[in-house]
Image (cartoon, rainbow, N blue to C red):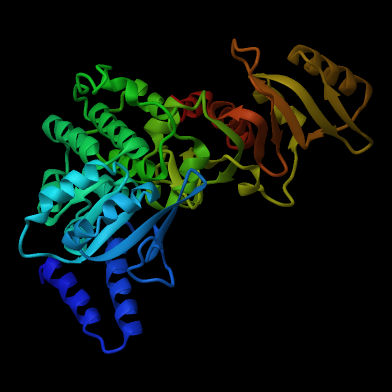
Length: 470
């Protein structure tokens, strides 16, 4: 059944109910169903009022970057009635979404409606048929094909849409943004849509999304924006939850998207490791390597953990999956017989219980690849914690201790820095009992490099670790 006929039938059935309370409940439910299809991420709440002059019929709520947002929804009999009652003007200060329940046969009121919404730049005036026309567009054809521009429109309309949206505009909007692979032409048209149908922060975000898609497909940026500024400068700020959940899975799933390091480094300014983890459900199974590698020296993490890679151990012919992919709710990659996991919060990787410490004699050759600033030595007769600013001092101190104390020292933990020119590189504590590497304000690169020490019994080569990071 055509979506416009379907939703009209639902509203008509509700309006024909015998009891007033059934009319109200049925109408609100029919509209809420379409709003929920349009943007499943929003929460829709009914109020105790219906067709009130200034109290909304329902509220749409959502969270973005940890902040709760809200917008009022007013139900009216039609767009024409909304215009005639001058509701657009009276409700303008409330940033409303006004939804007509029926569609008039005569479009004479449209010019008046357009004139009124121009005086209410934060208001959206539409009807259920137009909403259904966009809400019921297929986002995924079952073969993994997606239309990112249409998804962005759908997920932004309730939150920041403005102006007049009739079925004609809805059809044009859906058709014009339904391409699986955006072209320069469709992206330019999308920029025009962003200015015409969205306001303020929402319009800015949609422009940024278009620029990110241009960069992903190596297309030239839009020449200038309305202020004459190069559009490429718009790729700044913090990516909204909608942008992240629509754009990043789409781009990472495409084999024809650029692997240019500078492009993915720019993404590193827009998102962070913890936000990737929060979006694990839409990123699971995708190759995150371009993003992780381009930002390994910039993004901060709290802990890495090394665990045995059972798939390789159980099958000699199996090859480790060296891609960075979401594993559960943390990110990991395989190297040799090991799997290295990353987390922005140390509580997500608690490490193993009851592990055994390493032996100093076995660890020393591997530790010499690092700047060793501290080591815990545990022997049968006594335990010693050695700490020094210079790695050479630590090794000399351990040599002196061993010369004076005849014992087979084990190492529960050590503190290391990478041997790089950056003297500010954060120290990382390597816990051989828990098989974790932890550091406050440590970069992904520091934690992953240190985690390579944990696999010393089946050594991970320096080159193999470096391939995970570059």
